[in-house]
Image (cartoon, rainbow, N blue to C red; front, top):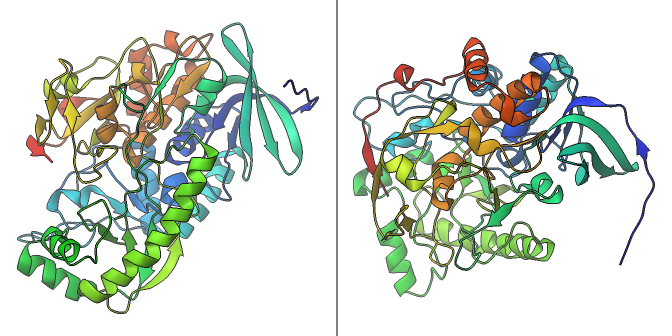
Amino acid sequence: MTYKKSMDATKPYDLVVCGGGPSGCAAALAGARDGLSVLLIEGRANLGGAATSGLVSHWLGGRTQGGEWVVGGLFRSLSMEAADRRSALIPTLPVGVLYQPHGWLPWFIHGIPLDPHGVARLLDDRMIDAGVDFLLDTQAVDAIVEGTRISHIVIHNKGGFAAVPARCVVDATGDADIAALSGCGVRKGRDEDGLMTPVTLVFHVYGVDHRKLSETINRNRTPKFRGKIRELREAGIWNFPYDAFISVQLVDDETAMINTSRLTGIDGTDGASVTEGYVRGRKETEELLAILRDHVPGFENAQVKEVASMLGVRETRRIVGDFELTVGDLQRDASFDDTVGFSIYGWDLPDPKRPSVQPLVDESGRKYESRVKKSLSTPIPYRIMLPKPIENLICTGRCVSVERDVLGPIRVMAPSMAMGEAAGVAAAMVRVAFGEVSPEALRGRLRECGGIVDREVLPKIEPRVDP
């Protein structure tokens, strides 16, 4: 079937950012800061992506256990402003405390718990103050390509279709939507079967007695209740395919984010599959909360506060670039002369069929079923954001050019903001192609803006073995 549609062109922009999640917001703010006219396109009703619409209200991967910043720039400034507005917390780990409620593991203190609605308001204000034009409830549905360049991004909202002239484009969709639509090489899921890591429909609850929960966890040294879950499974009560309970205390000390469920077999790029994820996720929310009330101390009076309006997808497409960051690079603790940021996060890409198992495959093809040693800090080379063959397109977030397992430390929100800020700065330097931007000049500008791009200035981080 052939379908043709005429549409009007909007005013032109230096930079069109597709996707208003953490990396897209950072890209838009960085581009506007460096003098570009910017349009930010977001399909949901508010900016913030997984942190707001997805209720994954925990900016991870940007701070050490000691509270030092590993991701600076816009991530740090947004975190501090959100905290000033009482829309986020910047936790510290008390001396001698093994478990704490903002993640329950000592090294999880690097997260920034937040209020999704407060952060959505903050992002509105930051875009308006920066002079960024943004459209909500608007989808980027196609790219018009001329040669090796995108000339227009086709959008659709209640006003109908329109074509936006763009000098440069950032694909911050997380799914490499624009890269795929414009003919760039992409891959999806595992090479052997295309399967992807499970998704989650996150929900928030209120009425949690975190003191009671904390006492139980510290007494039994069981932050994820694995032993209790084994008992419940044997009793026929816990019938989910995962074996761990995951919660995070948010800004309000009676509110918790429940990031426990792992919905297998969902493809985040397929509409019918995404619909199935929402339906299964809402059903599982009710079932899971009933179990928590009966069997997890502190949850006796918990009530659903909100269920996410956006499915928590961890993996779909990745671009195929000229350079790919590999498991071997992380094992060797490799350094790169085009590093634009760092992540401090673990592997965390569960098996598609066994949600509580973290398999890993190194560059020789060897499969690991338990542990692989790497440095806590993962460098982010600029090159992993460059698709081919489109020259004026750059990709950010979890769709970059990495070996699949490297998505674990790369995909979370603080390093995604580092990638987004680098993309916005690079857009101001582009003459013809993103690939021609000088890494030295890009890194210099990021330093000027408070970014952390040099390993030697990172806080001292002891290597450890991740699960």
